[in-house]
Length: 395
Length: 148
Ligand SMILES: Cc1ncc(COP(=O)(O)O)c(C=O)c1O
Ligand SMILES: [Zn+2]
Image (cartoon, rainbow over all chains, first blue to last red; front, side, top):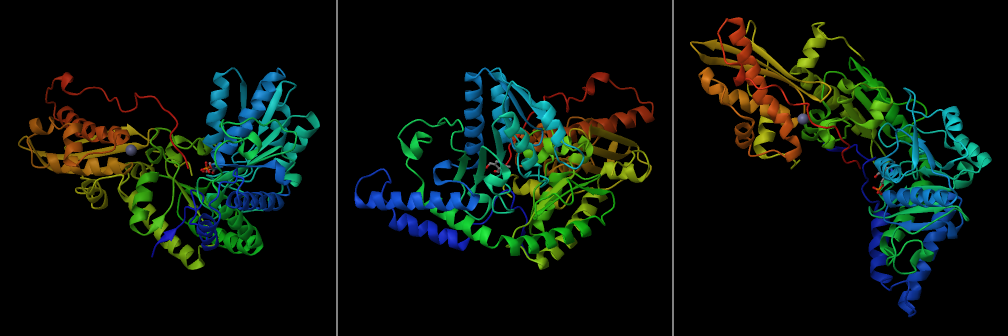
């Protein structure tokens, strides 16, 4: 059996999206900027997609910019608000310690350019405190950026509450909703955000395509200069087949959301319940305020990469925040932010499910994961020390 | 996964000489949990020859395969020869490792040396301090890696 349990990394394209992709590539091959019939047909399809994506998010069509994915959308939102802030003499940005690198590395760059970046901590539950955000926002603040749902531990952030504070203080608010869109209800009016980033490959669309919602009137500068596509906000001939496929995928994801959420969260809860029986482990992130498909654990005395490799041999695709899997020496910044010490953070395992997974697969995970943890522990000197009392258990 | 060579995967899947030796003649433990890799090596010595060797490793595929390979390379060898084992030799025997994984394999060389040093200490055998360079495993800078 092969169980793909890494849907937070990327998803298989939905059949409907794949068909829409090839159909669009076949039929709408004109360049939307061309005046001829093929071009104008492509332009119509493009604008139809924009309207449909906007409708799914509660936005207006002219507030949607198609991008190459989540990273680009995050970059454009942050850099636009920062640039506008500098023009107004405001150079403080408030964000969180658990953002994706698409946000964190952009902020690091801005910091080097003289911006003051404040990263709010999270509690052991992996959730930012609204009061911390409120206290961090001052008259100099040009942007607040808080992700809607975390990619590693699945925690859902109090974005609505924080955006209300931003609105009252007239500070632009961005949310990285890449992990949320297509997996939980997302409406820009309800969220009250000025910017929102989404990415198609997280909900059964193709990779390399996404969108940035920017509220009408919010500062928006192009990252890519060139032609006048996307009203001058994003140059480059539009990736129409990908945009069509993203639209179809999102419509399908949202149409099936109530049913899928129910089914997937039941699988998640069964998986969490079963894995908690493994001795000396802990769930990462809040149990309730979490994405329907996210299961993230730390197992004491084991290292994550070896877990992943043995799991792969058993047919299970998962991911880990251990240092050795990332090519860096530090474990995931998210696990450190929720207070996991290095020793424990190295033993993390993330299983992310979606509607294509089945309860039968969950049962298989429940036999494979504890078996692999036990195997890795059987020759772990750390586990031996824990057993012999030479080192004390943290979990 | 093609991150690693077939050789690495073979040693990772079927680690040789894994386990402990009761009442060993020497034990060496290197690395630390902060860095993500810890290796423990046990040796049994008879007439200056490493008669038996076992290891336990907390670490990634590269760390486990390197430990396993290192034990194979020193088992049955005179101590003087085992002391010559280098990280480079272990890596070559494994048909190479990704560049960013080399630091995990350095531990194998260091674990062997630490076990032999312990054997010398326990048996009051004088040795040249210079044969055992300080552990440099965690001397490098920590940085951010990739992410999906
Ligand atoms: C929270 C979050 N933000 C941003 C991104 C980047 O999106 P993309 O891969 O489309 O650039 C991802 C995942 O890739 C993510 O999980
Ligand atoms: Zn390693």
